Amino acid sequence: MSITVNKKAFHDYAVEERFEAGIVLEGWEVKAIRAARMNIKESYVIIRHGELFLIGMHITPLATASSHNHHDPVRTRKLLLHAREIAKLIGKVERAGYALIPLDLHFVRGRIKLEIGLAKGKKQHDKRADQMEKEGKREAQRAMKEKLR
Image 1: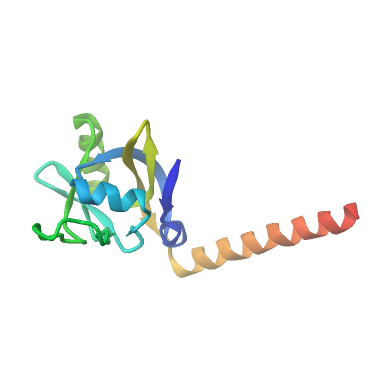
Image 2: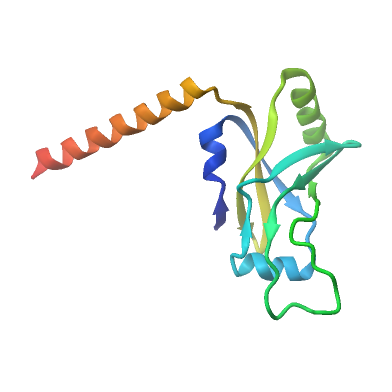
């Protein structure tokens, strides 16, 4: 069950591979995510000391969150993956010039997971070509609907 999708990522990047990662979260963050009070649009994934970290994901604390603790909405969150997957990602990012971007936040058996994508940035002409292709498909759909009437 999807919580949020990063549509901007699909516009700016060509995603080649996808990985599902767990996230280290605090209790108030889980409650806020269940209430859909987060944004992954401007976030990205970095590799530091052989570990993956999610930077820039904004989680707005609920009004009922504890006032005794300091809640940092954009703190750096650690991602959990198998060591061989991390090694594969490190090789691709460092050698081949790929970027790691968050694509989708979703539930899997009651746990919150993040789908990250191994992607290359699109050039402006690639973005235009994708937009033209989408519009062409929409026009074809409209024509088929009107033809069936």
